[in-house]
Length: 213
Length: 223
Picture 1 (spheres, rainbow over the protein chains, first blue to last red):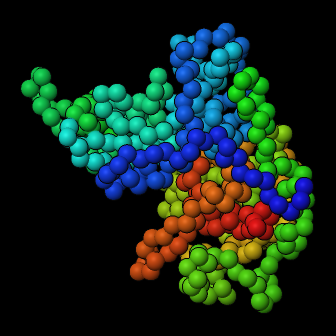
Picture 2: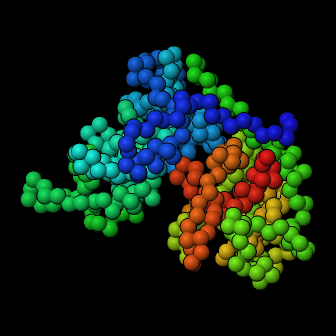
Picture 3: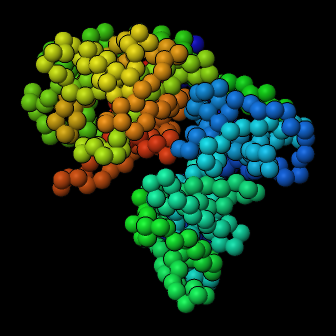
């Protein structure tokens, strides 16, 4: 091999993602930081036979590993992400002709950036994932909340199919600033986060509002 | 790497392969720690700012880190640690195994190997030193000797929870691609600091660790 380093494999993209016109600054910045996306394939339409597991694993930190070694090419990770589906029996990579199982420790994606904008239906939270999907939390992309072993709150946002992204710790903290309380049906109050006209309730953590870590 | 899934092309040429890496390490790393002699090029937190170091190199305390490169059949990776969240200094930050030189440490290599053993239980039988990067002067007053070493697979790690939360690997394919080196700045103690950041998934690699990785890139894979 010569002294030249190899070419970065940025071939999987389909061009920069077009940001809608007239975006507020925060949202425009979020689009600007997204690399080329690899458009999700129509995996829901494919039904090839299951061909067993391959030695691929997504750890809770969002890293994809193949044969015990993390994959270092964002373009390759995006490519795999574009053919990922969650079936009742687990996560699979699917093509028109085959379907192979992979291991996912928590959820496959991480939400790494967030922008809040004011729109006709109130505040909208938009997220960018580690594989550069951009999702708008709301009726089509709900937020959900879980509690980790130490009682900390782990927020997730829906991406597509049954694929979710966990918010990074840094984003979880930002989101914590947006928690509000609303009256619930029983006459009490309920904590949650509003986005695109939907209020996503946070199940009361046992130790109350100290649950954010 | 090649993954056999038909119809979707998943052959990907890795540009950091074991042979090239070892070859370049041998040619382009320092054979001895630099800094013992006069005019060395000190890398450090002052680097990107183009400023003078805020700690005089001669009063900085000597320290060493191990830059462990794991050569696996599926790829060449850097082994890093996430420091324990309860530590007072640099808590939960991503770091190389390492620390300050103890009086009984004969050389920086001794320090690096000892710390790797103490922090993550890395057996030195799996560690083959390859050479040294430039000394790195941290804003916190250490002059750090980075020892680059090959780590052969088959090792097991025992993480010392007092110091480290986790050990994990990040591919050099990612870290040696300058497109993944972000430059940031923030104000700290009244001056604007510049630093590198290389977020990999949720692993936010920045500061001294990113600076040393950048130095590895410049020596081995830079233009």
